[in-house]
Length: 182
Image (spheres, rainbow, N blue to C red):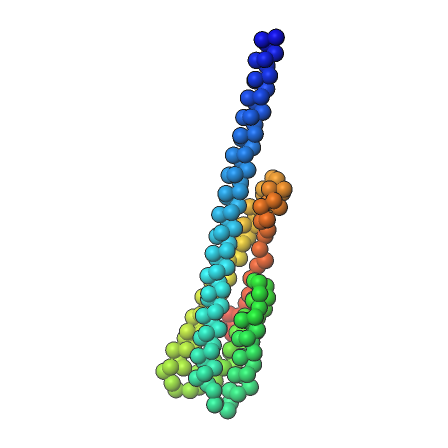
C-alpha cells in the first residue's frame, strides 16, 4: 500500500513538472512573439510618420506653386494623390497611394526647379530627401515584418499563434522609383 502512494506522488510530480515546463515554454514563446510584433508595429509607425511628412512637404510645394499657369493641372493631380494617401489604410494600399503621390510630384518638381526661389529649392530638397527616407523606412519595416513572419511560421504550435491573435503583416511594396529620383 505504501509503495502505491509513493508511485502516485511520483506520477503526480512528473505531471506537475511537465505542466510547469509547458507553461514556461508557452510564456517564453508568447513573450518572444510579442516582442517581434511590437518591433513591427514600431517600424510601421516610423514609416507612417515619414509618409505624413512627405504629404506635408508636398502641401508646401503645392501652396508655393499655386497660381503658376504651367503647374495648374499637375497641382490638381498631386492634391488628389495627397488626399488618396491620407485615406489609404494598410501597408499595400499606402504603398500604392504613395507611388501615385510621388509620380504626381515629379512634374511639380520639374516646374519648381525652373523657378529661381530659395524657398522652393528648400522644399524640393525636403521632398527628395523625404522620398529617400520613405524608401529607407519601408525597407526597415519590410525587414522587421519578414522577421516577424519567420518567427510565426517557425513556431511549432500554430494554436499558440492563433490563440494570441498574432498574424503576419502585409509588406509595403514600393516600386523602384530611383530612376526618377534626382
